[in-house]
Length: 400
Image (tube, rainbow, N blue to C red; front, side):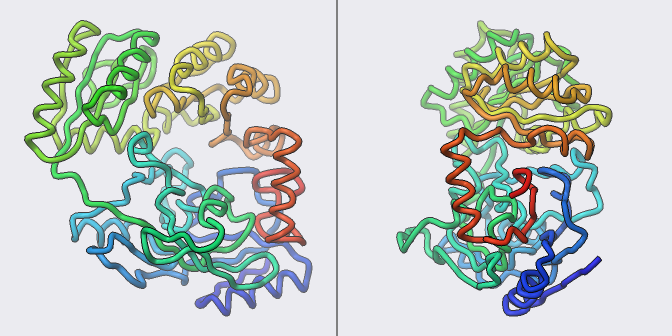
């Protein structure tokens, strides 16, 4: 096995250039916590990005931070917390879910996989906060895009293209992100004893209200319980901001949804713990014998899709993003089960296999299969950045 450990972007160019000259594909690795995402690696050769780390520039007044792509997320969040700021897209920590508890999440890894937590419904996805980068393509050429200002309109929006590309287009060396002030306080309103169809209505009403709900999730009866919740069958609605505003909106939500179920609430500290658990998929993380799927659908269809699947195969589930995100854990279903899951989505969303055995990840499409026209466009993009297919080959699509 060949292992390259570059310390600068020039050395990263040399490492990828050596792989290109030898026609030996490489796997890009930083913290290593996301190696289980996508299809299994098809190469033993590794480019370790761990030394491309450290905060390079942070301007709290400008709401912009630049760091080496392999900077641990804990270091980023600590620096932001010291200035009362945060990554508003609320990057989740899936280490427990993926069985990668000994690794360290990195800022570049979160952006490369476009991972966003429960606040996505209010603040947008990771790609919406990705302002710029320096990277090396599969041609062994260094390039950069975007900038270090929030209002940047120069050239093509390549940060959005690289977000969610899982390292198949380029190796990120440095990234710039937008940051936002941390809310003064937060609270969660709980509506307990709610059936799935009622939960969808409650979340839709709350998100359509003027109360600026920043998180809307549902744990149905039968789902593993979280310690911070009084029971299952619970809708959780998060509100954040100045304390007087949070108090007013909390009381309004308690009043407006009193007829839907038994009402309860969580304070600031409990709220932080609950939404951390939801973003980290804690209800399903310990179901080690099950494959875990992430379904993105229209919010009004979330409960319907989940129940359709659960009637066909052995599965437990919960909802986030107001019903638009279905987390589902199924006894490893194989080809037939994967077909049932994707049939339930029905081409009106995406079904992604997040956790599964190497055999399952190699046997079924991990990501939602693309229509022919979109697949052809994806191949042309790949050819433009990595014509010899040496960067994370096969991670997203077999043979690409």
